[in-house]
Length: 154
Image 1 (cartoon, rainbow, N blue to C red):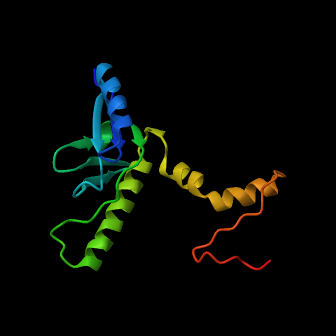
Image 2 (cartoon, one colour):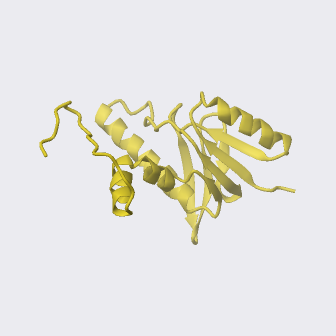
């Protein structure tokens, strides 16, 4: 019985995920682990009705989109664009497009998410959290964020 695929996107050096993969494999789960920043990401997807079908992967492995039931988005590297693209600006553009396509496709899958990218972005908005905390009546110390090191006049 195929219970679906757990797709894990994280850095190749994420040793915590090694333990997760081991545990999932002990439970006979199908696991595909990818790091979009470790080499060219491969996306071959077709929108069929309201569902993406096809594959996401790299040169060694791929996950069938229609079989993905869970996604763990931990600390994936950013795509670098295909190495055959020699113009740095064109390669950077292709890398951004790869990331947007990957996120967009995965976000619409009917899958259970662990650390959805939108939740990670919200959690990373520390400046916004300070304002929200104050608006909720919490005591927040005066805070300085600066890239120049200079104090901001009151």
